Length: 112
Image (tube, rainbow, N blue to C red; front, side, top):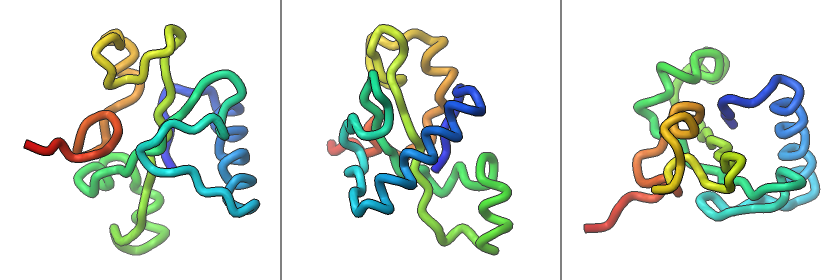
């Protein structure tokens, strides 16, 4: 898991919540909004593209010894409720959460 622009304690609490969800046998669907991670907003777990592993996942690459592991980005909305890739999102909100997927903001590839 990777998250951006979140205070250290909030990030730790978020990862702890994710751990508890997984430990209880509940795995949020990738690319679908979930209310299980935060009390007041939905979040979306997005698959991180391999092209971003080198620039963002150095310690994980070292730990696993390769790039053969899954990483999900925790995306969350701004104060107005807009996710970073939504048309209504501000440039500041987009910059705060880099786009690490191969597809659209939901992490899905666009179909022609």
